[in-house]
Image (cartoon, rainbow over all chains, first blue to last red; front, top):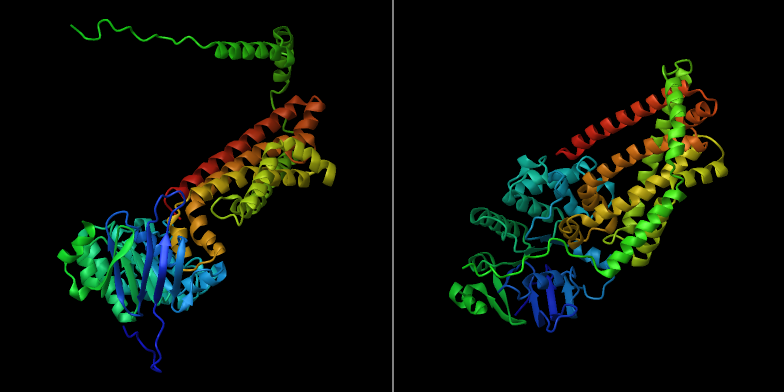
Length: 259
Length: 269
């Protein structure tokens, strides 16, 4: 496959490259998965699917070393993530956004303060801790991020007073505050009702298109995988069982993963 | 016929095993011995009743002749408690971070800091007061130092536990995007642990107000010193005034603390 190129026509490094990755938890008889290799070109949208317990979320977390992989190599935006020290790891993570199944907002703080926290890797210190201390340009950018997910009018509302769908959209705005190149999402709509889930996925799709982001998301919804991803990675029986463009797949063909 | 008709009913009381019986007898013997050790004497209690009545009678009416210096001493006591608590809390936060499982830089650091906090808590405040009076001299400074140490012993432990109990999701979300440890503590751990931290801090203030009275008895300044002097000079009417002032101070602080707790923890933040 010919990778994307930059303005000079040189091959651009993939957003994420994973080589021979394996994960075995301490005391477990068998690895969750092993020999997992794939590369995600910049700008591609990838869905990771598979049955319960196949290690989809573990794989996503291992890609950023939120869980340490047992073997293999990871490159993020052309830089080697595996083996890097804490400071270097934090710098590399500053180019990604991560949206979790549970929104993981700080409940007592406002939506705006939570969004501002998305920029913590780029600017440290008290000015980034709370909306009252934030620089004007940061506050304005955080408001723009909230606006992009349709929640600018709820900027001052406490996070624990938001609905599930609103909270997840604030979590997306927080991820955008980072000005990420790649967005990771771990079953971002699993805890939402179908309508709120559709809205959140639409928001994701629109933002990744508008900003030209790479999107890597875990999903249980095969329809979401087919509709919002360019490519699908399927885990089954401890292996990367499927790596295909969604254009050639259907719900029926993807169901094989669950048999 | 009922199929359980011939079943033996369960015993109402399980007879204790021989080991339990021996342990119980040993405790009973120790308690009886301790009564003698503690000098418990009904005859002395009865003999002391007239003295109690006399002192009680001399306390009424409470004296008003030294009201102003007494009020000044109450104020010093309260100031000692506030300064001791606030500075103690300020030192407790970083120590609690180092002592909490989820934020400590290394398990050995956690163990060492926990040991220091435990030592501060287990040594009684009167012992700390005697130590500081001997070190920096008589007066409220020794009392404030005692309260700082006592507050660290109390808050350090509970702050660390509160930080360990917070939801790990928001800190993980911040770590995932490259936030540093200090930012994660400031933006996720502390705001989530805040209700518990406020609660513990207010209890620490109440505790410090009560302690600060007693500390005066060993020379650490404040109204306690006035109380000791009045009792030594048999001015029980003055002692009564001081006791009423202490009672009022403790009640006011507890009431204010309850209101602040309800206001800050009950939904606003």
